[in-house]
Length: 444
Image (cartoon, rainbow, N blue to C red; front, side, top):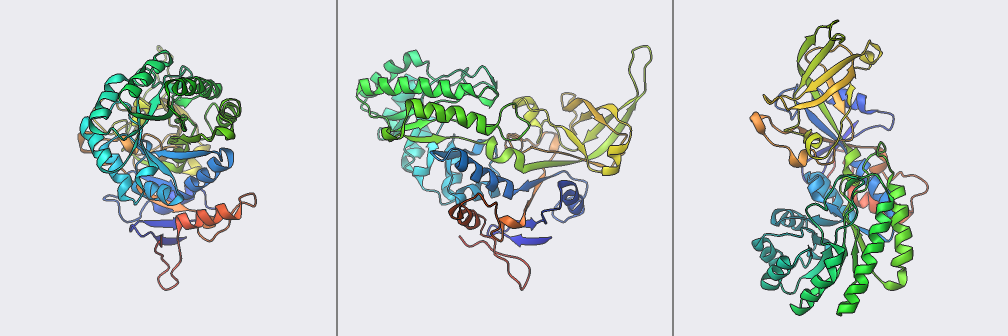
């Protein structure tokens, strides 16, 4: 396993294709860089993100992705997305500045927060970030005052009833009010350039995408009636980020493309953008935790319960597992010791490290009998985990270790990927081996 260095100073492990996650985690248990050897950590497979990038463009070549950095603003993820050529969905002054600091041009940013702080609007104007969303009259008044040259995108409310996280309760103008809002924007001499929607995060009914595109066309027509010439359709996010989701990315894309064909054919020359977050990063991150304490729960014949165990680990819902509380996720524990998998399983519970009794990761998990100091890991932990983690009770956020496979370093790739895409992939990772010290620097 070679170690390559990025221009940022981060080190990436280049693992053989036949090395599985268990083996890689074992190899890093005693690595340097963690304060204590039993501290939790993340593994980020940067190659997985590149594969998602290629997959997105293969399935939705007509859609330009604006990465929703709120999902996971990890510095190396952000740097990789920028080098791949992604645009960005930002919601605040700080997020905009982070993206600009990566060298991304302002026209690759959409300020996709329909209700913005006035000083943030002034900041966007100063930085020439013109595209921004709105969904109410008061927002139009703020934009008129602080950034009259903005390129506005009307966020409409669509059916998000089949999604885990419903955004319609907070954002989106009722489509019945769209015409009135557009008339007000026209009176204010503001420039509305398009329509956006979001079917909700964790959408499990792909047909919602088609219906949202259909509804957007109605608003496009109303914009033309008022005197606007819309040129942007923002289809938001809601795409699944791992293969265990109830629908696949391809199923969501199929309904989107059907909607594009029916309502926004190529001759309309409409720029179609999206705001995927979890799609790119969910499956790229694996969380690795250490068992710090164990409590045995005796069987109770009268209550009809069997012997079980309470496992306490060193990351929880106030840290990386906040996705349980706020993102409706249910991470599944995997035992690192492969021999343990053959042992008798017990109905156990898994608890986080803080002193809050709400810090529970799973109340019912089938696990073998384990001891203090042993490890478990959780797959698909890249979306809405580190982004919202706190330091409650003084617990630090886990360190992130980066890895990839050789094909994302030396140019090997699947046969169906076009040469141009392969070159873009290689330029994005830009890992060049230095034979002298077995490390490399990124050359942008």
